[in-house]
Length: 247
Ligand code: HEC
Image 1 (cartoon, rainbow, N blue to C red):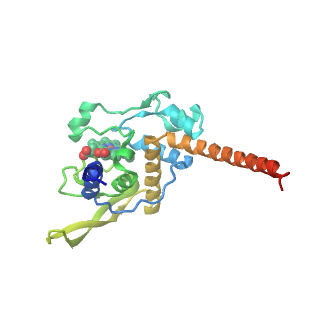
Image 2 (cartoon, rainbow, N blue to C red):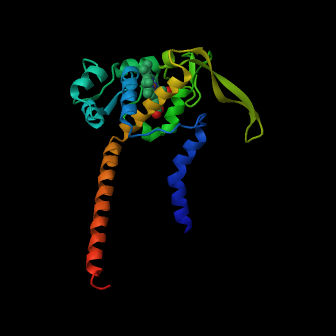
Image 3 (cartoon, rainbow, N blue to C red):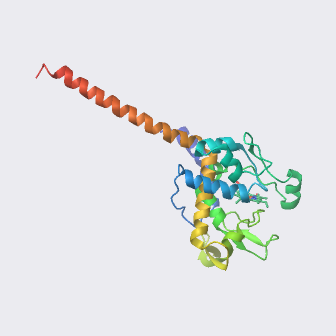
């Protein structure tokens, strides 16, 4: 490899490396199955109930979700949409952008493809690591996204957590207090196990939303393999036929 190629590769990797260095994720992501339609549907429900007040997901149309999940428009409308939503439109936000900016200082970003920008591990950690923080102007903070302007939206389900600190020596040799875990100090409506499942479902939905074609690819993948298998059988039979007289 020439020096130039090495440099190019490093430059291409640079954002990844920076990103990896900047975030310290507390938890490893439990396995999620991005084609699990039941999980996607449960996650969609959480997303629609708790997130669309502030965030939009403009590129995700309700009709597409109904088609992908194999549910009828009626069920979609009854169970997963607010009365004012239109089935052929994207998921729009309930608050005005100007209000949002005034309230939070930053407008809540569109979440259509956030799973691609942030990774599923990051999202899982983000939702699992909101904690009480008297020093923060909004009373909460987040170990994955320190100083985030987003309130702890799911506190009702999760309850409240306090961080668990540990003193570590950093690369410069200084002692530093770092958050190593979360401790539940006030239970919510869900048990810790149920809440984890809720977050898994939510992330599954967000991964699907960022790449809805994934479901289609899996479906196609099956038929491609089936086709290849049939082709193999035919070739085998043919070979048999051709060589019969030779032996
Ligand atoms: C009350 C308004 C509000 C609600 C409801 C809300 N958020 Fe947020 N969210 C925000 C704001 C404001 C930010 C911007 C935070 C910042 O940049 O400091 C944000 C940021 C985020 C981010 C980080 C985006 C990025 O890449 O920087 C994600 C992911 C996110 N929200 C997901 C969700 C999900 C999922 C829900 C529903 C469970 C939700 N939010 C509900 C206000 C909200």
